[in-house]
Amino acid sequence: MTRSRCGAVRCALKLGALLAGMAAIAILAGCCGGGGPTVVVYTSLDQIFSEPILNDFEAETGIRVQAVYDVEAAKTTGLVNRLVAEKGRPQADVFWSSEYAQTIMLKDEGVLAPYDSPSAADIPEEYRDPGDYWTGFAARARIILVNTELVAEEDYPESIFDLLDPRWGDNEVGIANPLFGTTATHAAALFADLGEEEAQAYFEGLLDQNVRVVDGNSVVRDMVVSRELKVGLTDTDDAHIAVAQGQPVEIIFPDQDALGTLLIPNTVAMVNGAPHPDEAKQLIDYLLSPEVEATLAASESVQMPVREGVAGPADMPGLSEILGMDVHPNDVAAQMTASSEWLKEVFLK
Image (cartoon, rainbow, N blue to C red):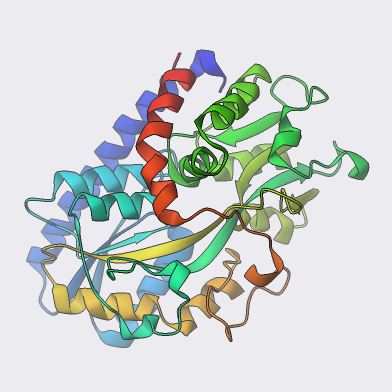
């Protein structure tokens, strides 16, 4: 999608809200119709990765899990809007996000409640909110995915700024919609790290390149695999699926000599006024356990443990081996509104 096709963005917002609403109605019906302890979780981590973990929790504890999964096109944003709308009468107990910026925004909106999980004791401070409103675990990275049949090795981009190079033709570079999910978080991180002027210049440069804007990071991956794109910005979990399938692609951790690669942990938090607070705490404790980090690392999502002593993905570098962007999560969250408003004006022209 180029600038002329941005009507799909508005459709994605409406569809995300509609589907989340239908799912929440189904959850309420389910909660009222059965006995036994229940916990309601809203999660934006891809269902293929999050559902097995929630099923394991259910089997281990006997607590029935009612989950609402976000749609790819409105990743994270749909659930965040729902949580804000439900603030006066919360329906969810736990928010499990695939990123951190919008979790921090929910904290600032008063949607979250503090909970100091004993499972978080060995998680580094940089992945924990000082007031215990959220905790990070199992990180992914924002990477460049290259089709190795279309791009010679000597031409691989080493920086996100290499995507502005005139050698790339129209519609040869792809990104997910920057108003949603980890792409929105990445944009806010660039605004926080580079400053407004340089960050805006970067996205204007992408538009000048006629960048393809598509509905989600997995779509970027699929289009690189199918040769519709030569390169694209996506996440390690989406990209690794193509690598594991033996597709002609390679993952590049960008900007390892200067800016650094953006690392994005999952976050989990308890909802303020959660209907099932005890069950919520049990689920949070479970999600923050070393076993869950190890499970996510060993799965196709190849998420990198944030704590030491947990085995990471076999074919992915550990966090200590990656130069990360030197930007604090709170600074990223502080830029989300401004960056999103500017991107909306530019990308929805």
